[in-house]
Structure formats: structure tokens, C-alpha cells
Image 1 (cartoon, rainbow, N blue to C red):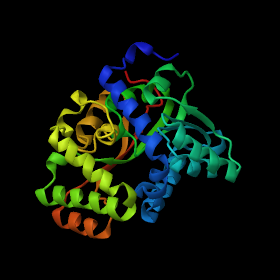
Image 2 (image 1 turned 45 degrees about the vertical axis):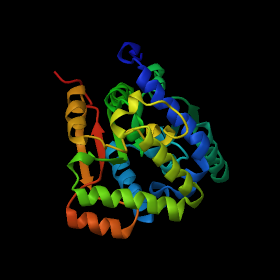
Image 3 (image 1 turned 90 degrees about the horizontal axis):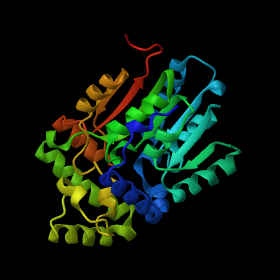
Length: 295
């Protein structure tokens, strides 16, 4: 049975969760049409290869694997698992993103279990266990990553795997050139790929500057139309200390199968600059719950 005593949703966590719900109510279609982690072919090829390796490591027929696509959105990972015959449960806080996923499933004849829920609440109250839990472009949306992944550990079957991908590394370790380049790239992306939202993004940025809102004081920031995106992508302005996170998760009971840190960006020119600076901007994890309890 789930241990609900491990889960306490703070006011700050609730605010960030609500920011995500509201943000994707406004932007689900735009996200699906333009997001790099969905449309970049090289990223999709790498994701396909990772999933094939992961299923092989589980060492059983895909049809017998129960997978949870946590914060699964419009179904980037879910669909790939369904195509491989895996039984998928998909959860997300956004009914708008899940409606896009439902339409894709209907078109392909898939029938996953789809649950609209905040991921912490779902994991704390669910009793089913899974052989695989995935978080794709999701950890940076969570105010308390460690707490959620600890709950995920409880929902893994012995020997089960947890996979995370498309999350940012800690930005304070970046060179100044990398920080400037990534900021410029963001506005170029808005201008060329999300053109209708570009003027609005500029205005939101100016209003946040005037009210002294910054990535360093998010939990004290009021949730409104100017701050909703910044709060929803909670760790984007600062990044995630993945090295410290992995250490803490090992103390929780996870074993590290892989922890890859690498440079990634939306545009080829940005990638070339990152190759020159040597900064790594993203990470992915594959963690295992031991098959037998530790002594």
C-alpha cells in the first residue's frame, strides 16, 4: 500500500502545480506544434534507442511490462511504448495535452489508461506497481523533484527502472557565453517558431523586470499571466543540480544504470557554440530499484 505519510504537498508545490495546469490550458496546442523534444528528429532517434535499451534491460516480453508515463503530456514517450506493445498508464495535470494524446491514440488504435492527475498526488495514492516509470521533459516542472522521485521509487516493482530525459543542468556552472547564447536562442525560437507569442513574451519579460521578478524568488512570486510560464517551467531559469540529485536518490534506494550529461540546444549554431565552450546543458537518467531490499 502507498505510504501517504511520505507526501506533503506544500503551498509552494501547489502553486507550481497550478501554474502548470493553467499554462498548458493556454499553450497545449502551441507546445505540441513547436516543442523541440517532440519534433527534432535526432532527439526522437535517440529516444527510440534509449527505450529499446531499457526494454531489453527489463528482460521480459514488452506485452508483460507495465509502464507509467508520468507527466506524459501529449504522449511523446507513451506512443513509442505503445508501438512496442507495452501496457501504458499515462498521467498528466493538463486535460488539454491529454486530449491531444487521446486523439493520437484513437488514430492509431491504442487504448492506454489515461489519468488526469497531479503526479505527486497520483504516486502517493496509487497502489499499483510498474516495471518502468518515465519522465520526459518533466522534472524541471516539479517544485520538489526529489520528493516525487522518492514516491516513484515506491511505485516501482523490484528490479524496475525509472527513466528521465530532456531536463536542464545547473546554469550557474555555465560560462557567460553559454548563458547569453541560450537566452538569445530562446528569443529566436519564439520569433521564428512561436511568432504569434513573440511580442507577448517580450512584454511579459519587461513587466517581470519592472516588478523585479526573477528565477531566484519564484516561490514568493504571484501567479499571474506574466509569471505563469516562468513558474510552470520552475527550474528552467536556474537548472537542476543533477549531480546532487543523483546522490540523494541513491540514498533513497535507487541504483544508477546510467547518468548522461551532454550539450543540447534547439539550433545547430547553438550546439556548435556549446561544443566550443564545453558546457553540458541537459541530462538523462536511468535508475533501478534493486530486485531485493538492501541489508
